[in-house]
Image (cartoon, rainbow, N blue to C red; front, side, top):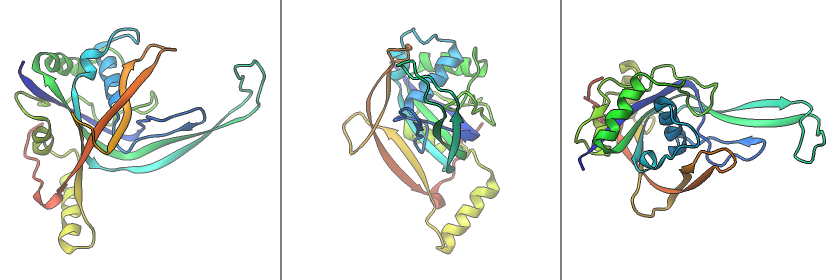
Length: 235
């Protein structure tokens, strides 16, 4: 089986990639979660919640953080909320965290034939695509024309591809690094095949309503000095 890497962009004014959300507290990780990306792919191919997702979860995922974004909180209230016991609890406060103006390059490594199908689906998604929550739409399409990197390993595909931020933004960051006023590094979060000290509970097992299940997934974080990063791949 020939392995390749599929790249997709997650860029938007608002993104949220929760992995530990409970009741009124809706969290977000600092980069796209695997459950969120698999859900995005399911929307692209038009796969129902009840259908199996084993082929998608078997893909090894990595993320390149082009812009970290700012962690923000959306404060919401709901009135006359009915609890499971049937009684009204009145107003309910909900804290929903999200990332503002973040930019991520997501890579999925696996079987070339599967990635080819996913690449075609991203070009013409069957259902709307969003960045973690249905109200968070992408500012540029996740589909990247030259995003299918045949025979490329995950990390090399992420490192080599064109930055998702402007040349001016990169130049400003490189200047800060040269002046020593600020440490500027590109962060990579790579799925690990062996246990590490970093764990995410975002490996989806099922999206079926009432039977949603997730397993742990190990990752490793690596950094690349921005002065050494060229990102010469094409879009």
